[in-house]
Image (cartoon, rainbow, N blue to C red; front, side, top):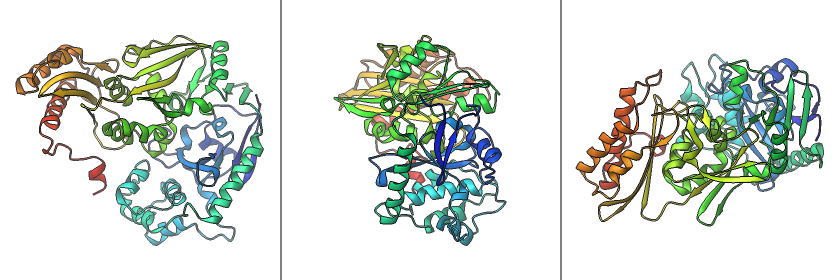
Length: 492
């Protein structure tokens, strides 16, 4: 394994062999490279002032490169290995003229105090790289992770619509991307992953799940780092020292998303963005749920496996996946075990995972043709907010009778969990008002939700019961409008 980090900063080679592996990309840019366009606003991946664009070799993408926006404040420098890092300073032309997205911001008076502007520009640049966008809803999604305190969103959205884009089949742009891809391949060569040793801590980045399994046998107490959307805050907010760190973002086989028979297999290292379309094909509501996790920057970094492995009682994907009957594959060395996802969560802060064991993949079965899947996330704001209650339901009806039902909630207990007493009240019963009321009462026996800063226990219980009523309406009266916000509304 190599002992130096190799990447492109714009078009310049960088090789770094002696750096604290917990150094954030934001601090590296400002303190080491003296590139001050990338700003720190929140240091937790919420505000977008530190947005950068990362390019990676991708043979399936146009020009052999794929690009994504991420938050520099919670990314560690070693995760740049093998990538191209682009900041707002790299957008200007050799003659000093502004990039089209910067010029559009000027022309539309999109910059006010200016603090958030570089982050907005980088999100606009990603839109430009993808060929431009005029549709308001798609622009809103792309910019949801960039916060403007001066409420200047209107002009910024107009700048996005007017800045055009580099056509995917543009010869010059494709040639530039192929050149970058070639340089990155040459920079990395055939070397294995990274093994960094610094006085502040050790960092490993294997390239295969076999290497990962062996490293975890050797270092069973290591912190497993995926997208950094949670672990990054351990450093920036809790000032924790992590040693050693094992990064799984370069493990190719853990990033695969593939349909095998009737099941969708999602590698534990696949990001939300990578799994979004495939999960949306399984059930539209889980696709919409993924779209509301964090921001575009967070979804480009955070992983489905990480959302499960950290065991949060308010993680958004576990309740939905539990309702779908998902399983996970855990691995230690060469030994694998396949368990129901619901059995992974034991109690608050404790999961069925031994030291040296890791989540390798998630297996999501395709719902039956007669099964309807519904999921709703309840939070104080639509985008970028922590869940108060999340309800997920998979219901199969036959001649008005409930033949199968799985109900799962997040935010109602110390772990994501099924509402088994509620399910028992529903199973085999006619789907009518009396059955609904019995199921609502049964929920009070399933859960005793806590009160915290997000919601009171009484509120949570009422919301959960009302989500059952919403399920009843949507599955028995499909013509009744029950959703006031969502993707369709965002596109209006």
